[in-house]
Length: 168
Image (cartoon, rainbow, N blue to C red; front, side, top):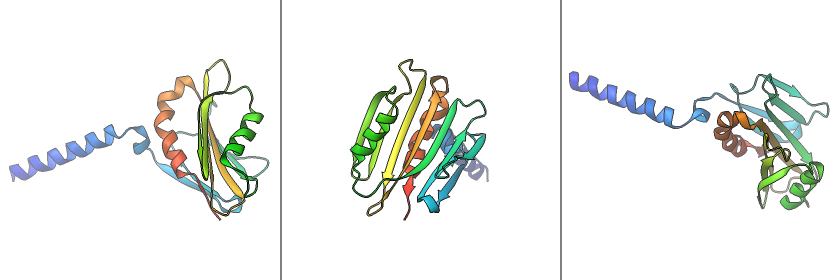
């Protein structure tokens, strides 16, 4: 009996250590948000944001902290099937010329760009776009956060990016 108790204790300790080591993103509760009418779905960490609101154009949803120091916008872009990932990035950069880009990549069906919102480098952004085969829609999100909140956001960016999907 004592041996079994010790074994259960070691298993519980190992499980706790694994959970702690997996980082804050794993411990959060995630909400799957779908907009079938605008053909996208995304997972959002429920505990990170205080407010969710739909944009005036209705194809955009915004999550933010009360202070606005972390903001996530998810949206769809009905741009047509012939638009390349590189063209999507170029269109976005034309809209935000003040951005300082530190990373940019694209392949068939996806594109990503990140960096700083302005030359002051006090606010970070990460933007990702996905397209489905034979779809005229691109889904996208942009996550913006103050550099002081980097520890709160860095682990969640990857999961948000992996969850973004274009539906048909």
